[in-house]
Amino acid sequence: MRRFIPFIRRDPVVPVIRLQGVIAASGRGTALNDASLAPLIEKAFRKGKPAAVALVINSPGGSPVQSSLIAARIRRLADEKGIKVHAFVEDVAASGGYWLACAADEIWVDESSIVGSIGVISATFGLNNFIERHGVERRIYTAGKSKSFLDPFRPENPEDVARLRALQGQIHGSFIDHVKRRRGLRLAEGELFTGDFWTGGKACDLGLADGIGHPVPKLKELYGDRVRLVEHRQKLPLLARLGARLAGDMLGFVEDRAAYARFGL
Image (cartoon, rainbow, N blue to C red; front, side, top):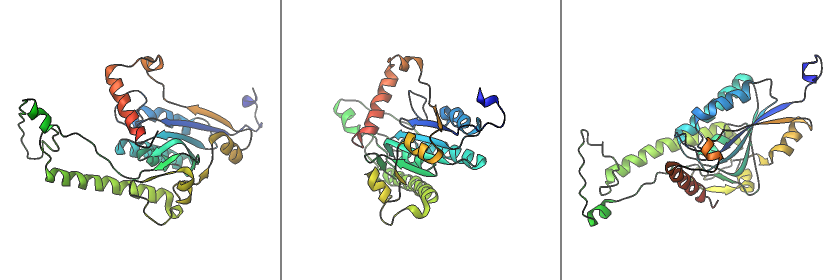
């Protein structure tokens, strides 16, 4: 009732956006992408007058483009509204997950969080010997010499590999620029951009994070004991909420687990 009474001081409100899962353009399951997160992020920044916005991150990364789009949306709204953003890392903020964390003004971690992996990875299979062994003949016709780029059913082409590495280098450069722009002089000297990753305490020493802190106690410390935390999270599809998965979702689930497994999780 007090919210409708004038001149009564209201308790500070901090919307909490949960960013959990692999970052991917596809809308499967809990995948994080700009299209599905846009309504949550916009609502968090535009509803009422939040004292700040908190991101709770648990992501091993994924699409660099979706990571960039999500982070850019957060920064644009934060700058427009003059609202401070805090990121809290749970198990992991690696690769694209760390890209998201850098959208915040301050990054808080657990001692055992996994942080970093500032690099680019591409993975595929070479199946040319397999199909030859089983008597399968590959027939492919292209217009343009690069249309069969990195075809897994053909022997590895050194020119294709060199081209891929050049593309990776460009994406890696954008990632590094983003981290340097957001973290600035807080970053320690040394090799931070090799794709290596660290636990939370070490990440603080390296300037990749600002300190050890969990959402409730840290936000109470910053905004008072009466601060209200309002959680915003993606809604799962009905089948996922009931525990059922389609065949395509099962494959995505395996891929997601593999992404977390790279960091021992």
